[in-house]
Length: 360
Image 1 (cartoon, rainbow, N blue to C red):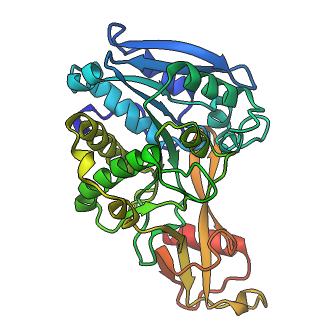
Image 2 (image 1 turned 120 degrees about the vertical axis):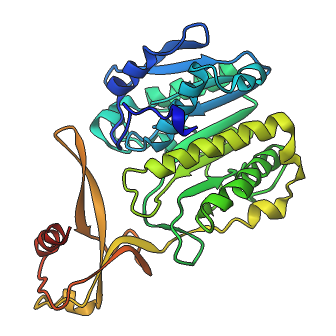
């Protein structure tokens, strides 16, 4: 699908402004674009409907405004269909895609909406306009499959070993016992099918999220409402902080999933194939600093210092600011980057930032 990768949509910052330029390129005979509601700050929330098949797939992305990798991956696939590729999908499926559910959060580059509410914890209360928009679409569209598209932090490993969770999946639970019924099993089979193909490309870098039930989470709610739901989490690939590789892998995942539904190949997978996917653990930080010298009493307690990149929106660009972080992955074992400071003196976070800037 790389030949249809949108070159004018790139980087981590994706807002309605970027999306609207893409929407202008869509063939109206294939794609129907609607404004299905407004955000807290009165920004339009768009939906795109395409396909004429009987199997209905609902997708939504940027429920968390600063999680754009999966949005771009779906747009790439739409670009392929816009160029007369994958016509068999249009015959078999009807899609409804909400590319930016949280346009205020997307513009501000925040996880939460303009009322500081995490929309993925609002599926029961439906206190926010964006949450109500998604539920109304769900109720009216009546999907056979729901795809909940997200990004995950760089702290996650796929299991206990030194492998980043580049892509993670979850078939959410529908009750406190984490039971498996036919609805949830279908999602598990589809995930196992994606895992079988992707593990050849990114061996040991596919994870599975914990399935503890939380009715406030949208995936759990939709599974509870008896619609098979899959959580997609786009994560870190080595040296790919803009997530271009991950974007391609998400596109490939979706291709595998859709084709497996058409062919029925997902049916061969068993429960144990899903649970064989290693569960995510918080084992990584972005940078481990070792062999430093310090006169700071707190720093002296640590042989290695954990640093995470804080993604900051500065003048319309996302910049990665290194910050000392002992909390996000308190039991960290690995660094995506390991820096030997060879006795250089560090007494505060500014020293860390200056030295990393010099090294890079």
